[in-house]
Length: 179
Image (tube, rainbow, N blue to C red; front, side, top):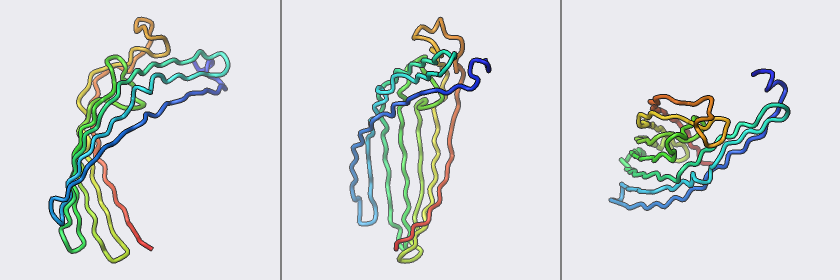
């Protein structure tokens, strides 16, 4: 296989989907804000990931055929006082993947996320922010059945078939300085 790809270049394009987000917020009190939003991601625009090589290598034609999907979010922010603000949130992210089209380079299975964070106003000009995210993807058993060929899975010679169990735990830290 290395001789097919020796000293070659390739061309590939990924169409990034458009998004539409609608959100509202409501002041529950002078110190507390509740926010809701819905995000529609137009994944159906991402039809293929085709890689075309120069030279003797055959193209890699990879249909995606994703469906549009939604993300639902809720969050709250509360000003505790003394320069401290805390935040909590949660969201549900729907998967755009149809059966047989799972691929590791873009979206995956349904996910639920939880966020927490806060800000502390150290001085009139300096604030410190911290954030945490826990994201849990639904366990998923799937495959990509159309590797390098047309949309007939019987002609496929490989797949990303397997059971996928994923989660993310991420933290953030920021310093904000106003000039």
